Length: 181
Image 1: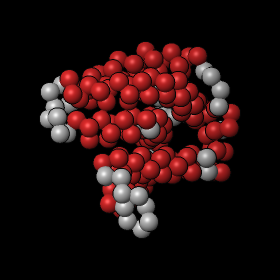
Image 2: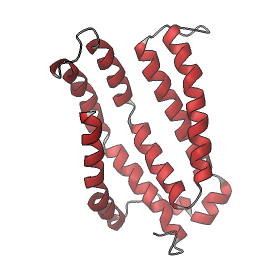
Image 3: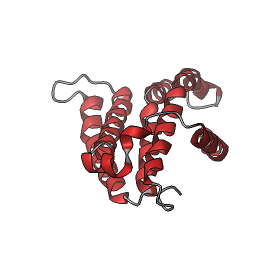
């Protein structure tokens, strides 16, 4: 909305509020990772699969902060009409995920053989790489100037309220969909 209204200086404030919210969610995500990993046994999953599911889930949840940051930055770039940035970051991250996961699963090129934990860790590394690419675009000189990124790193109560009012119900729905999957 800010971009469409010509208020380009307000666009990065939305990102800053999203980053603050993602940071505030870290303790909850860590708790969900720890206790959620224990839920697989109670949900009737195959006992042989439960330890593997738990490891994979806990590694991903421990680093899920990167997913929140990625969602924040990807939404921002889509909102300002720069979908190519999202495509580049996502394609490169997925492309990296394949060999990194393979190396970590099977212990190739001097890396330890981590099995299922390696698959999860490969995904985390690829996601973090994608986040790094998003930040490279976000903090590039031309983008910083056009959108006044440096001035956006502060709390904005109005934007945060809108985030919570509009995003919380949607986030809870997404969480419930993922949890029941």
